Image 1 (spheres, rainbow, N blue to C red):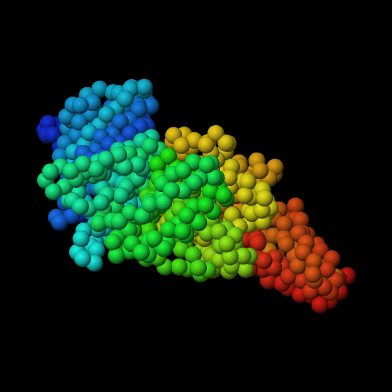
Image 2 (tube, helix red, strand yellow; image 1 turned 90 degrees about the vertical axis):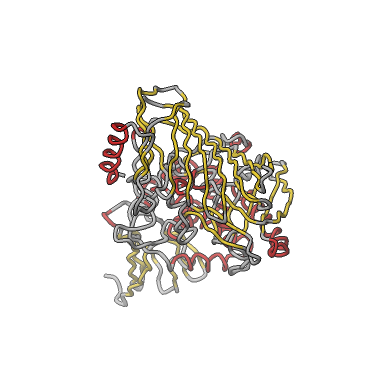
Length: 563
């Protein structure tokens, strides 16, 4: 953001000096990442509600919109700052009902108020805007609008914006630390196209001009990148699901007409995944609204209560739809519990990825589970901390400074949880998972939005320590706060097995080591980071089931007897 300050400053001074209603700077520009350091004037407000009205023309691939933001002022501010992609033009901006001068440059809308607003006041901002929203270059990884067509040429389009933030298609405070408590979307499209979005459908009203407006209401806090449009000639498959709480809620699957039979055949697996998550983690968080799945022209995304599904009903080994399972995991890991800064994104992706392995084990057995974890193990990069302490934006958490990309927040995150499960024991680990998503029964029962909360890596550690009764700071320092894997130094004489951990920066690491000694399994405690185990000439295997995340151990055999 710092790179934009001189441009915005000059344009703002020019706009205010000339008294113009608004200035929009076009030209070459690409969407910036989401998050990062929070601007002071953005930290001064807490968004309570957004109302978004869009009139979309799929033929011209343009939109006209009005966004109203209601926010609570936390500390004095004399400035309004929102994000919006330069591909869209701001028509007007009003604060407290009064039209204001503004500058729209480098993806930011800035307006200076005549006087400061003070803590406790309610800020109301209305932005009218329009144009051709940025097409997604490679959805869902590079986001924007994905314009597509069905086999008969009917428009079919969606939005994705995890990395860029929702400002690629509507004005907002683009930071993961601020979820609006509620949101309303009024989306107008040509009849008979269907709009599938987040929350609960309130109404569908014909405008008498060949278009109709869908009103969707979101009743729980939602991250802005999880707000989604899905528009097409959908058929809806409906089921009623009974939660582990005893409550019934609707499950909807919006599919293209040509996918109707496949969608019906897939619904039992959707319900099986849902049941497994509820039994493993606790009740589905958004049962006061719905669980929705919608067929999309891109692979998928975890949009709250309306996950995007573009896996084309393909199964992965061992015979399950990994894409649906992963995106559904985010209803708990990402949408229910969310990181307020991208530095903790492993909580969304690592936990979500590990849920797949646990499901595979529960449904297909231990061998299938080990195969899944070995597949994840092969992709580890170990170049950057999975959970850095420094503020990160959405690009920095996925890409190193040299531009290289790795999946460690997914794969390594899942392996860290695999190791933590072995260390804690299965029963305690499953209790840890449930307490992570629902710290108490009150939150598990809530459906009014109070169940949604922010967490960070220190919260994860605190819950793990609460359940285990141990100080686990060493575990989190080694595995999450720095990139290198611990190395197990192993040597064997005719009588003994010598074990010693080699850890970067000399960090404390009292991780036990599992051994197979003949037909006997033992756990070697290493409180000081090393141990000597009498083994004689018995056949042995170190960590035979690969339960501890480490560099692959090399066994050095010394045939000479110990002195």
